[in-house]
Image 1 (tube, rainbow, N blue to C red):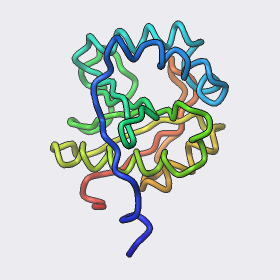
Image 2: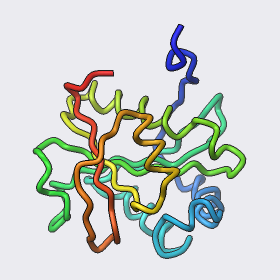
Image 3: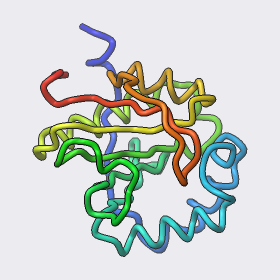
Length: 172
């Protein structure tokens, strides 16, 4: 039995208005605030905007019915002027944050990213990209554990980004 087969199974559900106070609290946590946006209120407004958009799918990740993380996928080709439109058509980007601080460093990040990426591949997505700040060593390690490989470093309106990708043909 491999370690991967022992990973928990996560459930993904749409973000609802009832989740906004929880998300505000998560966005204020130091381990999230350091890397996510320009403060909890601005970041929360971006999530609310994503709830109404066609290019982004904001989701709550649950483990045994408990919300533990926020994840979103987005299509850079649907957003005018998105800096990642150079990626192959059908590519989806993703962002993730573990909410409760006591769950950071427990292996949930790589496991969630692996499961979510597999779901996107099953839906026909050919490539998934993720763009951590190069200084966010914990995130970079998590994404590497989930099978992502760095292919570029960029600076955009979102700040410095280590571009990482995983392609569907790379398999599970």
